[in-house]
Length: 195
Image (cartoon, rainbow, N blue to C red; front, side, top):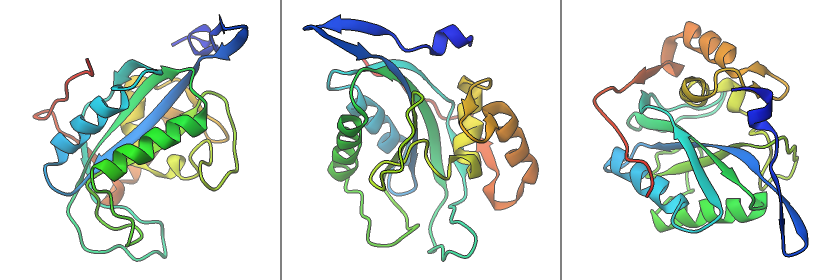
């Protein structure tokens, strides 16, 4: 992907200039039919206008994760993907869509780092930086997570994660660490592109 592929597209609409941004999502599930949950979320993201599908990664499996020093409740392994799209929606509108999808799929937030039917994170939103606790951009822990970096590197290895470096390099380093944070590609599982 070249730098020009990542440049915002400015389109005049109703006298206003709308900027198109590349947005990266991380999706995961470790409750119920994990693959079906992710497929349902992918479809739901594109049910409403405002997102243009670019690509999604292969499906990966990983053990549950919590930062050092945090308590990790007992739970099963996650399926994870990274999804890339283009949008002219503002970040707040996209966050609202994500939260509505999680709620509709019975996402429960009672236990920190607990199991979940669905987790959708907005990893990056173009070159926007935000310290807003509701939507910090880029995602503050993306550089620590193999389950984000490795699938993302399958799609955009040369993209820079602001403040941390090239996604492909970060993914390689994280996989080399091994241990419980390592991810395994599930070649037996596939998703359908949104209609």
